[in-house]
Amino acid sequence: MTAQAIIDVRRAFDVLTARDDIDPERLGFVGHSWGASLGAVLAAVDERPSSLVLIAPRPSWTGFLTDDPPLWVNAYHHRVGDEAWSTYLTAMAPLDATAEIDRVDARRLYLQYGTRDDVIPTHVARQLVNAAEGARVDWYPADHALSDAATADR
Image: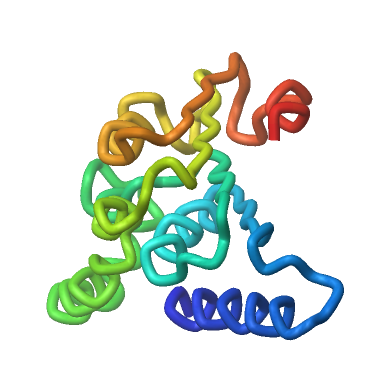
């Protein structure tokens, strides 16, 4: 599903750039949470978006699933078994934002995070912030949905 979503966004860029009324130099991407993490991977494989706004992206989906996961993740792991779980994590690891971020010109990225986010805690967010050296990063006194100030800054 993640790989297909990236393909779908790239096809959307194809459609846009085929139009006479679209300036291909001004394509951008805005994503929130999982969509923002997807945007980091998109930036690594497609240079057409000149800017990408990543709102509260999780640096690593596989990290979330393995580093102190919530009970529902543990229940799913137990239900599918260790072998299938390991296979899934191996397949998903290349699609983690931090796995791809070194292939991105970080000057294209604008990261926005909330300091009161209970979905992406600050110490987790800093993993991607540190990996995306050169990106613009703004922190807001807000939860995962961020704030009107973040919206205005975008």
